[in-house]
Length: 281
Image (cartoon, rainbow, N blue to C red; front, side):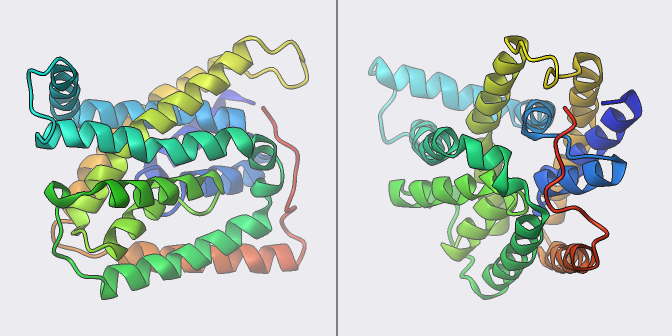
């Protein structure tokens, strides 16, 4: 991977990670335009940068949740404290993606990266997001988040293992379908993603560090630069999105997803795009 390719992919990652339009789909498509699929390893590691942007943006909330959750284990804070409940709900909601991510590793690295699947997920989940945002009730806040809702959120996040679904898009859609308002759905989606993204990125980084196959060894210089750039761009996008959803709907993103997915279908049908090009790690 060249330095130029890494910079372009980093900007794309930062711009698309938190918008409900699927960063993995965009990395896959832009990678194709640059010459080849950047691969699941590069994608997972660069996502660490954008997830660190979440940590910085929600630092106060994260520190408070961790402190009160730990204090509850020692009996110093009641277990029904809102921050304690949120800590447990993030843990519970993270289980589905951890289990399914380990079970479906081979599919994630191969068939799931087919552009036919990417295009289908962009369109299908774009429509579902649009319907959920328009038709769902909008009464619930994170104070009303239950264990059942946390598990549903968790399985919705696990769908993001398929490029084109979108981590934020899947979880926000689930939240809207369950009646949560837009800021609450987005906030929990971002907090829930922290363990999953940092865990998968760390796992892929460990594999890359211990990789002995020169043909698949990752280019560390460009990858580290891409991670830093994705952090900066990602922080700006989080700030924009949290402000946007206070007064506006997700419909522009729905239209964009459907249009992009349709374009990919057309390009695949005419042989312009290769649905399963090999990764260029």
